[in-house]
Length: 291
Length: 291
Figure 1: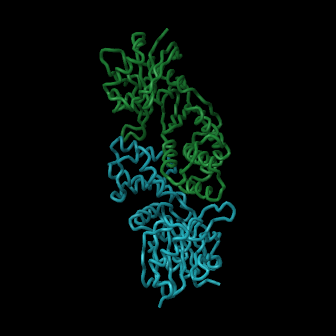
Figure 2: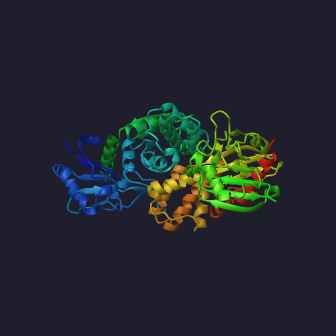
Figure 3: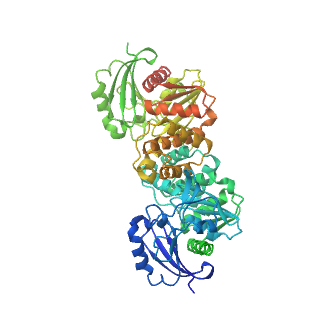
């Protein structure tokens, strides 16, 4: 039985799910019309077009960039610490005539925001139970480290790692002719270890050039070494969390690299979780917490 | 009286100087035909064209990228430690019929090179006397920290800081519409302090985005804040040198920012030196050390 229509409306992708008890995913539809390419008045039509036959079955709850200022309707940020109840109390309603709500994003601090996220708060609440504690690591263009304490979002930090990797590849001499990462674990590990042992990332980046000049680093290995350097720099900055349980949520090949790097950085309890399951459970949990 | 024709032939610029006693610059000519745009067989002609009337006056000594594998003639790297005598013993002679020599670059280690420079070794030897010790910091696309110990080059490290700054501006969302740095010292200082206090540079870069979102950082201040972050990261990695005398050599506006940042990082003895004077004295010193 469908209890909730859960929607994960990110910048570049739309995922609509029929959810049963405890947020179990009964069916899903995906569409490339992410929030980043839609005007505010287009969201309702896209939702109707992709899943109009589902909309009468149950209430709709949306997480992600659909709630940003440039999205369907701004759902102003909640602040840390914030649990499912806190988010449920701040849902936005973009269509007064229908049972559709948008989960707010979370800002680290009220003043100056500090850091912000939209969507990852829902995934994190879905990964950990109401009394659990741990960290969600969601690698990608912007890598998020979300700390859950006793079932509530206690803090988080975002790293520009993926975007920085792309920028170095695209716009520096060391990125010229660089291949795709993923083929050379030894080069990746070497980059991670170097960044963990010494945070001089500006110097290590020049080192990529020197190693290429000296034929110390093959053409194919350079992308893995660079990826290891930047992920290693991210992990060095988050090393204080190494004794906490970590769940990695993201694209499979990238998650695999993070799991390798987390082990090298001394994280002792690392699992990999499915992103769809996490957001579905999180949406269900927030919906159950509605006042 | 002209003792030496000194040439600083970098990637993007050519500078030819008539040098007198102790390397005093009597006259100079500059030309945009840097080594980066010349084929090996074009160097002799450019030298003749720009300063043919000087070539009979004194021997010619060239420093910089003209000695690289893609330059006029490769002058294989010397290794650290290396003083004026060590460099003078390894000069390349691109034209057997004439008294023209090229100073070798310096590599940190024989095996794998470790790090490399061409031109900065000559500047550093010109900045410090035969018994002096200190550091030359040459900021720019690739920022060099060259350590001179008792008149010899003892070690050095290169940071990709300038190129990374350009890549972030060119190829990330935080760089979009960013202005030129230099107008907002307070924003620059804030970036430096943040990077010095916490080496989490990937997170600080995302912070630029959050500050812009929260209107915490004006359009004009963003480039200064970013510049401060990256220079601060470089200085954090070189903090072990803070008790040594430092001479900053480079473009005036950038040198000014480095002097600010070095003070914030606790460097106690910081001066600014002129690049032309340094390379002229270094060339003269190497020439005098010839066997």
